[in-house]
Image (cartoon, rainbow, N blue to C red; front, top):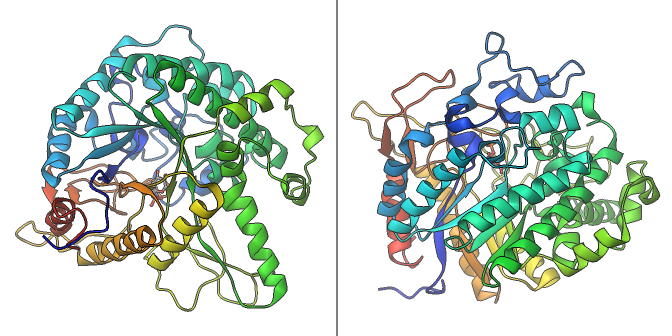
Length: 481
Ligand code: BGP
């Protein structure tokens, strides 16, 4: 076999999230989660940021594809068997909080919800796939958002602690890898998914974002404490979106804009979760949003907890890079891209305006390791694209293969740079509902799922060309891309 730079215990796999995958939204005693109240389709983000949005689930008004997901709730055995066929060593999935605590503030968990994840975990282990669990991925019980105002409310720390303890006590004998908050830094762009905040509950006031982040930092530290006390062998990671950022040119004002973008977006949350303390630029960042640290409710006990229980490793999503300039108006913007920024003239974009940049992943890995010196795990990466099904049912997704191949090559380069990378779990390894559009047609999977944007289809699973390609990548431990 050709020589590989990937370590022999490298964790190849794939990633999903409960709210985009499971369906069964009221089965097994599950309560509604915030994602169940968000419409699918083009109006998704616009509706959520309007002043009238009030979390009412109204199926007559909007299409709700998240209610059905891809019905993993009833297909998990078949899906995990296909992951095993690809050779997955690890499968990243999230636990729906409202399946375990339907309302969120109960003291006793819902046993039927716990049983569902027992089955998923045992099915993974039967196939020698290690589970990697995200505790909080873009959803929370709807009740907590409606009646407590989401993560800006300190009571959520206690509720989340109960949820975390329940999950770790139940699964910690079989699951040794956990992540706390998915893309915690995304609150700056997606307050609804990340922190359960909408216009009515103060998403427009940056003070709430910083308070919610602080509460999440405390909850994350508690999760590390609970996990390590249960079994010191359990490793807990944070999870951030990392968007490698370039200054538009060598003009120092753009270089400074880039420095601040990196501090505020890429590093702020990780600095607290990995180093255990608020970074030096905290006051500068808060002031840029009109917030003073003294406006927030932060106690010495909480800071001590954050300091002591920092995470063991960093996990991150990487899809694209960003280009920063001080005005952002003189050049074309990266249209359609939720993270915004200026269009980089050297890069191609996906159909959704995400700028494709594999070299940026090598830079990300080097920057994160240089700054934090802890192991890194790429838990999301991939290309959202519309797939064409041929008359004979085959799907030739060479564009996806090319995207993934170039990014895996970038990981190999970073390994040569000496960066310790634990694993790689491409996003949406099976087609699922898109987080930003709420639609099916933005697909990432190696496995095709027959369902359209209105939720119609047989839900039949089939292998795309990339399925066999990824199978070979794993079988050769990255030697053959
Ligand atoms: C990340 C989220 C995922 C996922 C992915 C792709 O930000 O953690 O939940 O959906 O992006 O995004 P989208 O579905 O909007 O294409």
